[in-house]
Length: 167
Image (cartoon, rainbow, N blue to C red; front, side, top):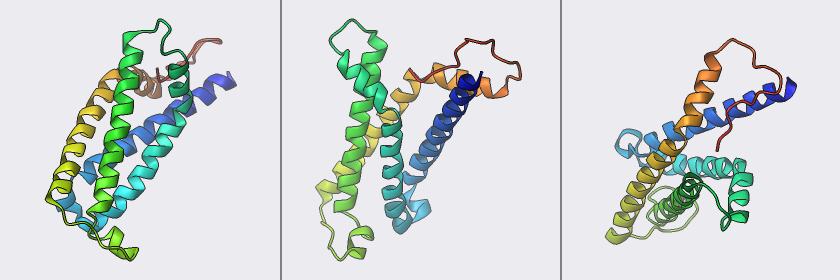
């Protein structure tokens, strides 16, 4: 029973972190609302939380790579590809954002690059990240729904039953 309760708390923690990241990414895509200073500094903080998120799911990623050439479901391959492409898109956003920074780099004593191409690349990487995030959410919608539904059910789970796991 204690294991089920711990699993429930773990799933709730994952869900809260995911919700925080989703809200944060939406906010980051509103630089006219937040201003460039908040956009840049919150972007650095957001990226650290994103890396934490990836670290929490690291065991899943390692297991998929170990079993990549064995028979697995298409959904697992899709998740892996979408997550890798999403991480690459977020890395591209971060690197290009830092290079064109008007606040972050000058605070560190460096000057930013003034490049229209780099700003365009930053926007394209953001669009790619939005697409990968949408696919990531779609591929995990079953877990999201089960976890949220589990928060509202008061019934006890029978011994030995499993709570929803991120797949």
